[in-house]
Amino acid sequence: MNARAIILLIALSWTAHLVAADDETINGLNTEIFKDQMLNQLVARRIDPNIDWHWANAKPVENIDSTGFSIRWTGYIKAPIKGQYEFIVSGDDGYRVWIDDRPVITNWVSEWQKKNVSVEMTGEPQRFKMEYLMSPPSGAWITLRWRPVGTADAFIVPTDVFFPTEESAKAKLPAKRLIPKNGLVAEYFDIDFKKRFGAGRVHRAETMWEGERPHAGVPHDAGARYTGFLLPPKTGRYRFVALGDDRVRITLNGKPLVEANDDDRESVAFLDLTEGKAVPLKIDFQDTGGWGRFYLHWVPPGSKVELCIPPECLYLNKQSVPKSAL
Image (tube, rainbow, N blue to C red; front, side, top):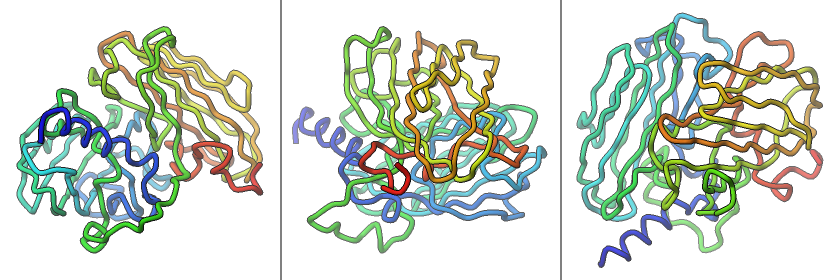
């Protein structure tokens, strides 16, 4: 297989979640969330689509206090082709990764670090485990990227290579594939939004580029537009919290919600929303080089806890939104 074919295969795998089977049920990792830093006091279980979180001052779930938390992801990973893959983990604070029960990255300390390792991937399902700890007062975030064989750029490890069980990793997908519903459509541009480089899908209203490219061919000075629909789980006034490095402009229901262009200062806005009524969301993000990050979080009505907006509250387009919510 020549280099061009390898790159094409990787690119198809990376973008496959645009047309792949419903990865909300087939793909992802088992996630256990603990309210202590040592993975002892379990408070929630769920399936996460991938490992690309920017909590900052938010919490992964509501019933966690300010003394820190920890998370364990488990499941299987299946590389699209066999060969050497470079895995890159960056986070604040500690993390460790196992593949086929072998520790490949260990950084179990309370400080920001970026670690990488080359791993021989078989192209078959391999056991995967990753753990993360957050200790205050630093902001919390974690990303897992890889640089597949034959490619120059590193990307977030995509949802379609993760499976919660060995059975799901080995299962053959049906000939007719379901269209995914949740997440936001991501389009990548030059810094002035004049030249479009490609598109994909993200699961959250947040990102941490941290000097890496979000999509093949995108320059380091770049813009991204994320569009979709937001479906509120409760009726009432929501407190939205946003941060942009270098700049983020957010529009909700056709009206400007918030603009943030200071990497150290959050912007806050309040908006009344109705349970079960979807509203269009657009996020324009610009990174002029360097770190590159933004997030849009919320504090739901009746709560005092800042949370990441759950993927199940985001819909790719009008066609994916339940008819009762339009």
